Length: 228
Image (tube, rainbow, N blue to C red; front, top):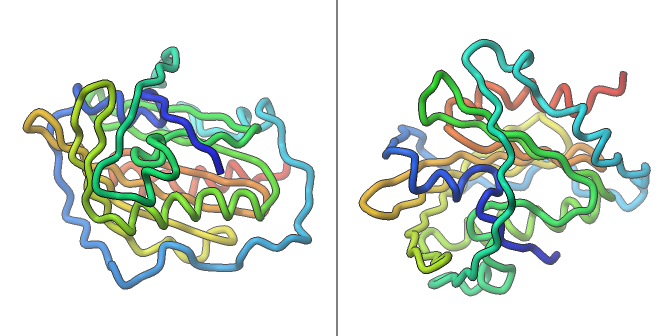
């Protein structure tokens, strides 16, 4: 699957120069696969949801509760990206190296800050055939967690990356993936948790501060998969 680099994807890369250092006590289980549950079934051929339909299934400020402000979407800027130290990611493209937006045709996204602090949570929804979603996100997660450390040079800025596989949240959807990303540049580090869940022909990705991802993941999946 082709991917492209966008510095505003998931609010992650754009936050690197603005978010102060943070840490987490999460201890990843590197022996646990990030892909669990049922594989994509070729028989699952429900028509993909439109981007407009996906937009209505995103969490909003009312769903999240008090203290959350939606971030305005900034114009997408594409930078030249070089991946050093991870051949698998270099082959996929620079966007994969930073967990950025995928190029499925039907998509919607939103990002929020919390409590006036640097904490953020972002949600992305995609709709396509189950097999395409499974293959696309699976290849990216496998490549990222297969390279524990590497470096990304984007727009001339070197970023040291570390990725750690986390236990997938079992019992949600058909397939699940989860990882912890650490971006380090200019003497500061940003820790981002990223969890993806495929439910039939719908793919949900929630990224951001680890505590906020854990807090809102179930709620995001419930709204994204609601049929009423």
